[in-house]
Image 1 (tube, helix red, strand yellow):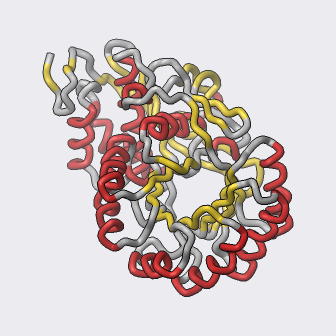
Image 2: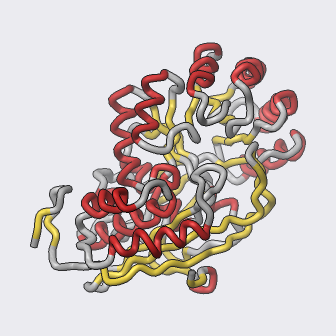
Image 3: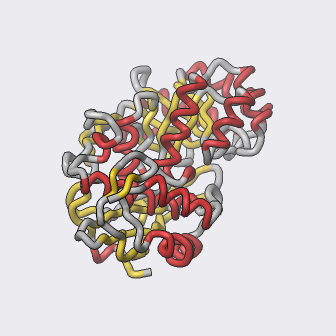
Length: 375
């Protein structure tokens, strides 16, 4: 037995293998944001095997536009740089392993997130606790928004009505392709759903600072809750300018990948909210560090997603349930996909309420083997 850096006592368990798979999951309809259009989500699934028979599952949803990764680079990173670090290690010592991984490979945040998730899955199973309880929370239900991709104002209004009829009380509207039409999109959705539905707006870096101020002032009369990433990720001065000149809270997404990015954002006073995504920051371990920085700086948190299936969304949901500072939840990517690689277990949905599994670890019981291919 040995004491890990995280204070947990490691037993004789060892990681014996790491398997990598690819899943190609089709969207119900083309999903468009300011950065481009997706018709499928190509994800990487990681399975970590231990000598005691405990298995950990994780998922990466790489994005060349946001994390600078592809499926191919993610597979290569896991097989050639992360697996050699993992095999032979005691999986209970999560902090020790992840530190060594960071020393061995910079970047590749979604690849690291998949490994991080699988390690926390093993950790929860080892102590027979759901991950959210392991992280210190007894909450088992969270409320998510649902996202409407960029379409014509009329089409977005139609989608909004359909989602509200399904029980969603918060809508996230993608904009950022044309400021004038963006105003029409928000107006159309508000007119369609009435005053009781919460509307969030996400420009995905699509505006200049001056465009952002002008556009946000026009859409504020439609009662929007927040505007996410109005300007390019690197322009913290521009985002601070926007924040200073509008009444609506500003959320940073692509501007914050790491704890260091969070510190820079705090110093620049560029946002009221930080959107944590496990795929951007490298997993739960780093997400906890960002949450601590946000708490110290009195900045609220959102949790979001990329193109994860229910597997990755379950990991994020456990984290969301455990962190009180997370006031805005955007864990809906799996709801936009036709296929689900989780056959049994994982987070579920009823109206807009996501229920966490009570089983240990992530609570993933069965994966659809026909939807994942050896990488």
